[in-house]
Image 1 (cartoon, rainbow over the protein chains, first blue to last red):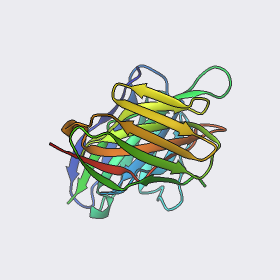
Image 2 (image 1 turned 90 degrees about the vertical axis):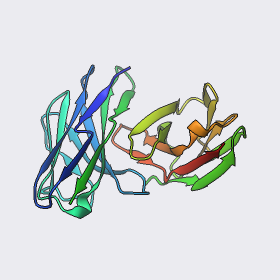
Image 3 (image 1 turned 45 degrees about the vertical axis):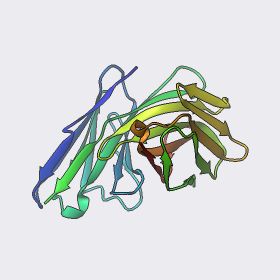
Image 4 (image 1 turned 90 degrees about the horizontal axis):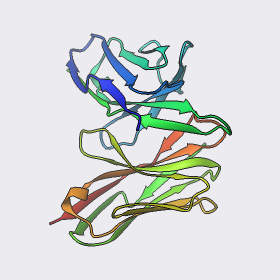
Length: 119
Length: 113
């Protein structure tokens, strides 16, 4: 089956710095990628949706200037946490989707996640 | 807005017991429902995927059922093992496009040797 990778798998950064997280679909072209975050002991919450070559759509309450999403190709989406603060410490997971021929069906694959700790 | 709830939030059972995890959702217009396990500090491992037209899926000791009309899914784990200890999440994809996947609140399972 298709594989989605994330890099790095974990990262520690200092408050005020920026961190970039990559999400790659390794053997298929993902028309849409989604970014989720998970705070400790909570479920995953959708942050934003990105389509290749267009601007990301952010969920209510997610700061688009803080969480920069770039979807430059069908196999790569990046999430950059700018001016990170301790409250941004979380588990970030991407979801890659490709539509299948006919009837609106699709496949989806989740990345393994990136643990971000901001000190 | 789709809301997904999982009951119980936590469950502790002795090894060997059969158990059932529950997932309920408010909007029955779903595309599919997927069960995941998540180990502490790790990503998601897909367990079973049920399309909206299906009633159940089985994989090894796991069996997931889906009742769209009542907005419910169950994950049945037979002969539980300590290695089954993890948090189990159900995730509902809505129909009419793949824009939204709503995750449940999770059930933290502990299987005691």
